[in-house]
Image 1: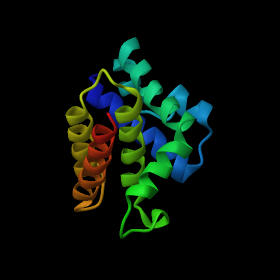
Image 2 (image 1 turned 45 degrees about the vertical axis):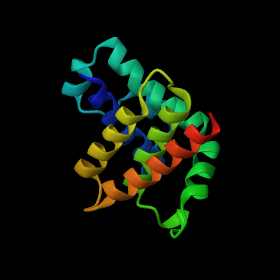
Image 3 (image 1 turned 90 degrees about the horizontal axis):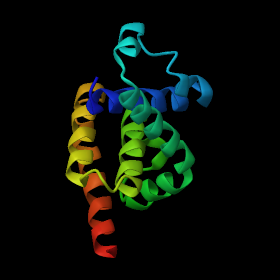
Amino acid sequence: MSRRKSRIIAFQGLYSLEVGKIPLDDVLALSWVNKADVESFNSEEGAFARLLIAGTVEHLSEIDELIKKNLTTWDFDRVNKVSLSVLRMSIFSLLYQKDILPSIVIDEAINISREFGPDDSFKFVNALLDNIRKSMDAKN
């Protein structure tokens, strides 16, 4: 499995927390993941998925405030749950995984949104993450 697959698993876990109200311990155990996928995990890939999930949950209030701050014409409660899960995970990476280039984080978010989200959700995700990246660059 690759980091891309780890990101997909992390996004799905965050979505399960949001929509299915699955307990965090169960999500982190990856017990909900297809057995063949879990068996193909190496320890690094599984750890990366768990890091994304746990880190996002740990910083959720900060991440959600950043999303709300950057939603100019949209209500937070109306954001599609797939897009919200992708955004949360990606913002965690932008804020706390400085060893990963922002362009990679945003590209992965766009690709996951294209694959799993509604029709044009990838455009929304791209625009919001790009605004956040630019505001972070302006602060540095």
